[in-house]
Structure formats: structure tokens, C-alpha cells
Length: 504
Image 1 (cartoon, one colour):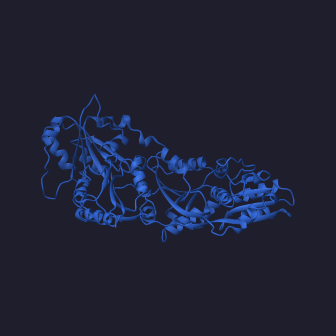
Image 2 (cartoon, rainbow, N blue to C red; image 1 turned 135 degrees about the vertical axis):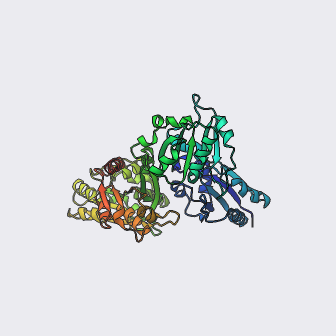
């Protein structure tokens, strides 16, 4: 069997937006992913569902698996012929023990590559308004591991560090904060030197405590801190309040779950991240065209008999035109047909194919589309409705109120509920770390419920795009809120309002 290859990939400090393009490309081609606990949820959600995942833990003083065993796993999986991605928080070579993993790979003649990652000693201070170098304050940066074996003294030349007069960043040192600060003062550092502890930087859990090297430990005890966190010591820490920018974003500090069909790129997610939210993007449903499309092909062969085609989703548009191509149907056969779209997303999907919708209801749901279409149609007209196999019947109920309309309700694709094991959504909600879930259809609500059996849904704050979606969330007892309009921008406004309402 041909030997595979290993890629050591730095996942960055947490924010998926800081994951490199090369890292993303490499991850998308992985067959096996070996990952640890410091990899951000946003990056984990990008692991392809075809990849086999191996969790190896690893946090300070709490290793799920010994390093030697991790090294061996990489070798074994590569020897089986797999493309193996070793996904590591931050950068593989900065206190990431990447060098130790490469030693065995090189010894076993396993091909490998290294994809550097954005490292927390630079990124986390930047997200907290602290430039690690500044011409008026310091011209050097020193990164030190703050971790030490229990019962042993630090093997660090604190006097040398003090004499550099540079910015000092200690990783994995929060539990020994008092020892670190005390050693710096003892080595001659001014006790009033600005210092900071930065918690969970670049994520919704980001928190900053700024004091001095002599008062930082006391301040941390008073205000509390969670790991992972880094310690920054230097004059540049005094700039934090002036230069802070992340917490000024409308959704900074909020973690939002967005459920969506797997095959749809989410504009919602991009806009939420621009507003400062940490977004957990998880597919709740998967759509697939039906294998048997005889009914649709029959309709396509007789398009001239239809006066209207009503599309109820972007997926419906996509499948319709894919099957139209497969059947050899010329798009010019649509020339005499008017087109109705349920909302802006569906309207956009049509526009991408060079078609303008003749009718879009003011309210984007099935009942409103059916009512608007019923009023626009003349008696005896024939309407084609290509849609999901489990689609809501509201559009049909409305159309049936006008006698004489002929309706061809044709299922073109099926919907399957998705589950994944990498991120425990139930645990996240029960721990209170997810502030809001955004649902853009009733089917994504049902998909979410399928993926979180046993969850107390009263703990879920749900931002819903419309009435049907809200009704589905209400049925499970969620704390529901509905956007004023069934648009992405309106849902975003709703989430911002919810954050302001729940601000402590």
C-alpha cells in the first residue's frame, strides 16, 4: 500500500477567520484529522464529514493521550495510505510539540508538510487592543512558556527578560501567575509595570484584566479568569483601553449557533462574524435530489402547458435546473412561463441563472406565496410547484381556495437530518456557552432537535426568520423571537436586539 502523508496544520487562536487559506484547503482534503482541545469550534466545524476524526485532548496538565502515542498515531495512519491532518491550536511549532511529532515522521520516512498558524501571543493581544511592539514603548517581543513541572522551580532567566525591556508573553502560565509576577519583580522589574491576563482571546469568551505586575494576581483572584489565557507584561498593556476594538462590535462576546442545509453557503454566518459574533456553523439538514424524477421530467417535457412555476426554496431552484439540464430541456422552453419565488434567497438563486421572479410575496412564507399566487392567477391556469418531499402544505392550502386552478405538486428533493460528533451542541447549551441559535426554516429546527436528543430546549434562545420557523421552535419549548421581516438582515437586527436586551 502506498504511504500517505501528514500535514501539521496550525488552527490559529480560535476565531475561524484567522485560520489560513492553506490550512483550510489542506483540511478540506483530509481523510484523517487528529485534533486537540485548543482548536476552535469554528475550525472544527470545517472538518469534512468524510474525514475520520481522532481526538487527542491536550491541555496543560490534562492530556487525554501521551505525546508519544500521538506521534505513533500519525505514523500508523500515514502508513495505511491516508492523508492525515494533525490539527493543532495556534502554530504547530510554538510550544505545540510539532517538532517532536516530526522527529518520528522523519525517522519513519513519512512525507509531511507544515502549515503555520496565526499564533496567540500576537493575535490575542491584538484582539484586546495591545500591540506587542510599539516604537514609543518597546522594540522586542519575547514569548515564554509559563508551564513548569509541579514542585520544580522555573528554568527561566527572569533577570535577562527584565533587562530586554521588551514585551513579555507567557503561555500556559495562569496557574503560576503569582510565581511569574513575583519572579519578575524580584529580578528588578518596576512593580508598577503594566501587565494583563487575556482569557480566550479571539472568541466570544474573550476577557481582559489589566493591572500592574505587582497587583495582577490579586486582581485576577478578585475578578476570576478561565483558561486558556495568556499573560502579557510590558508598557504596551497600558494601551489596551485606548486601542480596544473587538468589544465595540455589536455582537462581540456572543456565541451564535447557525443551522443550515449543508449544501448552502451561509451569508448569515459571514455577516454575524463581521458583527463580532463567534459563530458555530453546523449543518442541521442535508438535501439530496430524488433518484426518481419521472414526474418532474414529464412536467419538463410539457412546460408549455404551465402558466406559472412556484419555487419555495433556493435548493428547489438548484435541483430544478440541474434536472432540467440532465433531461436535455432547453431553457428557452421557459419563455412563456411566469415565475414566483417565496423570498429573497430564492429570488437570488433564480437571478444567478438569469431569471427575474415575476412574483415575490411581501411576507416570505408558504401561505403568503400561495395567497399572492392565487390572487395573481386566472381561473384554469396551471401551476408547477417543484419542492421538497416533506415540504409544508400551506402553499397548496392557499392555492386550493381558488376553484379551477390546476396544481402539479412535484417532489424533487429529499431532506435528511444531520448529526455530528465533534462538537457536543447539547453540552454547549447546558453549559450556557451558546447565547443564541438562529433558525432560517422549520426543517433546520427539526434537524437541530434530531442532533440534540435530551436537551432541555427551554435553555435555547431562538432567533427565527418567520412564522413557520418560530412555530416549530415553539413546539419544543424554546425561548423564541421572530424577525420583523423574513430576511437575513432582519434576523441580524433581531440578534443584535437580543444581545442588548440580555446585556448584564
